Image (cartoon, rainbow over all chains, first blue to last red; front, side, top):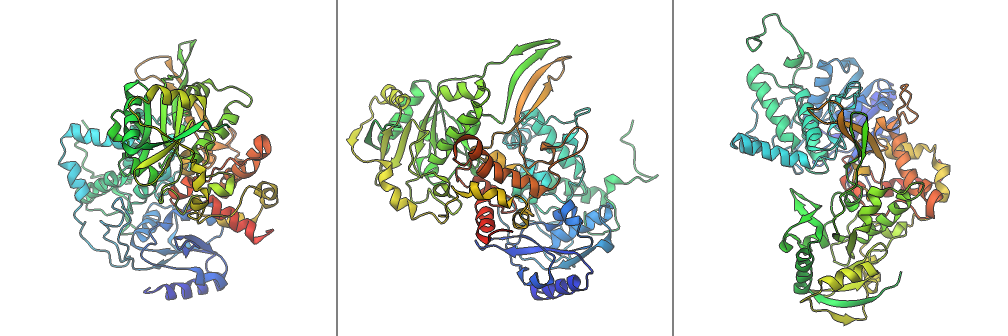
Length: 269
Length: 352
């Protein structure tokens, strides 16, 4: 789709013909800021809106119970949202026949903490192949190990365990997060150095090969922790080692969630 | 509260005062740039206090952490034995909080002394002298601020021991509000030129009022809130809430905590019972052991926070709302939720 007008028209049809129960998109508030909106009434599709500051990854709402209760859903997607939706298909979290994607080309320029600046999916239908050069990752890789450790220790020191990174992430879909498990407890829920290391690294590891690099975790973090660097680096590693880019093919499961008889297992000794 | 006296102090004089505070071995906490934001940190050198910055930008997290840390041990255990924990309480000067933050502490006092005197909070309160900066700079008030709508005042002295406000380009007005403030000033005023003045921060109130975009009065909404408990409009306003805890954790008055046992690594049967910040927006907050959750949906959890701020606390304690209008929750909300907007929209639209 090329314009928001076409999206509104399609949304109206989908709602009128009862092919979907709800449309998730962007709206504009009184303060002229955009925010996620949820439309069930075909009369209201004019509220749908899109411009370069529509930075939310709306795919996160596809797992909210109050949204799911509306049956089939339509969702306005930019490139990163589309990657998320396809990622959720590939991990059997959603059925492709239950979600209609209303794709829009995105020209976001980035809104701090590198969100959007390393994007390669401005166009959801024809994503670029190459991973853009990532200055932040290069900076970390140039550090000696102790310095890297200090960098992340300083970052995680600020963590208050508000879990905004998890809540805003479409791929953190576990019904019970590992940090909430108490019998036994795997990760300390205390915002101490130990608890914060375990939490932030465990979350990053759980996202290996699944993170679509939308940068929402870093954007949401109220204390400015650069979670995006960690996640983008892991995504890059997966791409290099497995030639896999998360969320590009809805039929391809993430490499670390699959098993093959001929997997290279020489690391097991 | 009686205003003792006020005097004009130059920028240089204020720097001297800060140096004296440090020389007198007080622990000094003030907003300091950390990464891309301001947070309350221990100050070791006077130059670390950047006055322009703290006048213009509000800290992301509130100063409640000075009294109610994000985590703290409340008892330690070794096997079957339990040991009391005393909170560390060095003599502290908390410098550069805003009038809304100071008021927030007064509201918290009521909670932490209501049915039980929380020694961890109270001992820290006792050991701390509060130097507040009135929001008198052109840029102190932004589009999220609404203290005036919840009974606050950007020049108010309540909750502060000393009150600073700007006075022209290079000078400040320093008001002594309490005896504690007077003691601090007396012990640290060596070499600080203080010129007596009959001005007060409050003289600037009318001019500052004009800088507020959010002017609607919310002090009476507590009477109306119960009607809107099941309002569809409130559900609509909060539908996009994702259930993180940013609002509660950045709030100067949210005070819920969780108690967990933290075993000490590498030991058997040794550890501490710790008190960690919690948030009513978390799904786990009300989840019962049997699996039932009385607040099953996110909009119900969001509603709880709004009602606690604007209806339950006033009902229980003081007619004052538990929201001080600092705007931190809306500044940091990753999906642009906003208690002021939600409440004014819903109540403005009438009965659902």
